[in-house]
Length: 144
Image 1 (spheres, rainbow, N blue to C red):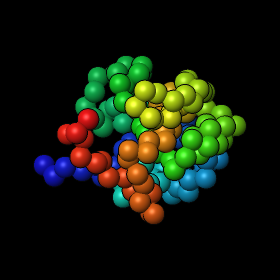
Image 2: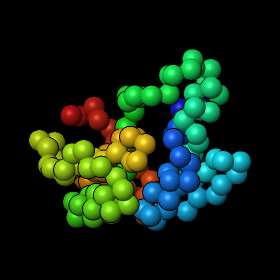
Image 3: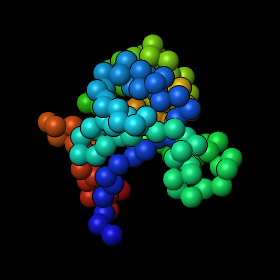
């Protein structure tokens, strides 16, 4: 298997509400058969009915609830960018779960959940610089 992720699919309870939330953050989606696709850099973010997604993955009925142990991360170019995005997310309907704070490693981050409870970390990490196009390259971490 090649080391890459092509699509991230979020199971949502209301596709229209979820699409409206992400579009309020400035994303542009395309809907096909009750599924919304967003181009997100080099990969796609997909919104699909939570129960449909669970069935498609072969999970038993009722498995589509609760925290799935996954957090999506969006890195920005400054601490102010973290604050601005958390404010915009809250205005769009997110719940701020962690206010932005610095940590011992120089990372400045906060977190929110979207209307379906998907966790997003918003971070400024000067050790993980962003390219002009927003792509991130993980640096050599052996020296840490």
